[in-house]
Image (tube, rainbow over all chains, first blue to last red; front, top):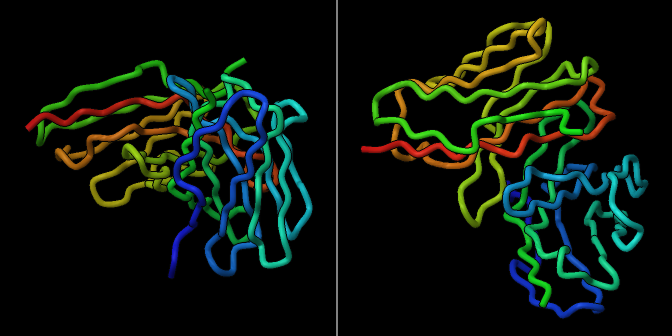
Amino acid sequence: KAGVTQTPRYLIKTRGQQVTLSCSPISGHRSVSWYQQTPGQGLQFLFEYFSETQRNKGNFPGRFSGRQFSNSRSEMNVSTLELGDSALYLCASRKRERETQYFGPGTRLLVL
Amino acid sequence: DQQVKQNSPSLSVQEGRISILNCDYTNSMFDYFLWYKKYPAEGPTFLISISSIKDKNEDGRFTVFLNKSAKHLSLHIVPSQPGDSAVYFCAASDLSGNTPLVFGKGTRLSVIA
């Protein structure tokens, strides 16, 4: 069974631009969560989508948004990029509540 | 306020010896705990979990111990192997699965041959 895939794997943007990251969950998984990892920090929760509905949201500014499509694929958008948005963005999927989350390889975003 | 703390940023252990990684939590609502392992340029990989109804869970070389009264858990790796060198994250949630996982900052384990 294919794992969680994320595209692109690497991205370089400049301040003020916007970016869209994509995540394809494991087949049959209906929940997708997004996390940000910066150097020296753990994984910071951004949001979770389940069956196209945002179920939980972390403590991030409104510049960070996401959505989930009917095929469970998810996108995350960051508008008006700041230098501090440089990070590894990880996506994780699970079939339902109480199930283990499985992570993709991440998208490394560098904002110059 | 950090709800899940891994106070040791790094740990070095000799091959064949025991590795003990520690994690403390502050939120009494947490009743489900997981350990993930992360290699560079890869996403975290699920390792082992434990719910609050147990105080120990074992899977091969990996054992997780939970001390609810102390709000402390630990991951034991015996024997340690060079391939275990990675960053280990402790995560916590509640059993409902409706709340997001809260992660610690990670401990970098180096197993020296």
